[in-house]
Length: 355
Image 1 (cartoon, helix red, strand yellow):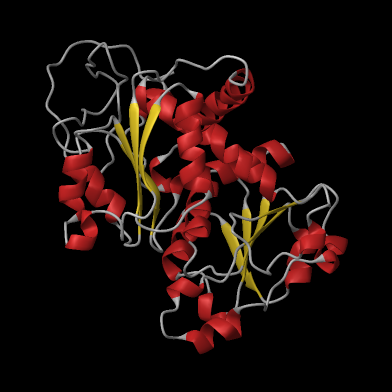
Image 2 (cartoon, helix red, strand yellow; image 1 turned 60 degrees about the vertical axis):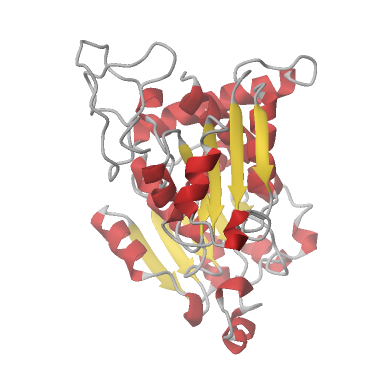
């Protein structure tokens, strides 16, 4: 958030009675406020802008997941009577890149909680950005119409720029090859729901690890947990970047690169498959074609996986998971996509009205 709305560090923070106490994104200037005694903050009250996976600590993650479980019940009940939790609030979704699950789940989350949505599906082409308007000017304009902005952009760092400009909360819904923190939240939530634990997890990240913002954010978030081991399985041209490896090492997380998907699948609790992202290759089509199809999750991979293990995918998929895998109960990717609704309902509730 911009300086006009950011808050001082806890534990002694003042707050207007009509909104929850917010923890600003670390790089954003803090708003000066009158000091008075306040009770210690819970994890839900330390949220501000949602920009990157590193901003969450374990207490905050635990509370987000608790609220997400509550949202499962709210969503079921909403088929009979509409929730009014966010009645009177407006969410703007600004998507400069294509999206199905992220945009629709955010919009469904807002409506399930009684709020309203202002949306642009292709802001890069069908907004004033096509006329040369800067992101900052767009954000300043849109915040005048809404209470929270959900932004997907093609440039890494765009969400941070938006948060530094806006006086309302900003949620990063994916910024180029940078990060996708809400996807990481739903991924970790899914692992906990499917496997029953997060500490001690063995996780195989497969596919486009260089360009995949989902695997980057997931690596950051899963590093919050103990005794985790991550296997990287990818074509040479899209290997995981060194900044993630260095972060994992600094957090004491064991990681290993492998070219043998079957061997890795036999050891892991979770195989997290991703598509090779053609749109990130530009004119290097030869490299894309060399990478695509090298690692495919099929019945042969299923045959070596432990019975309790699951297959996840942020979707969309192309041919990197064969369709005959879908009928296996270990195929968790559509359950994973549904969990995105609950996580995004939880985030909207926490950011706008608190616990």
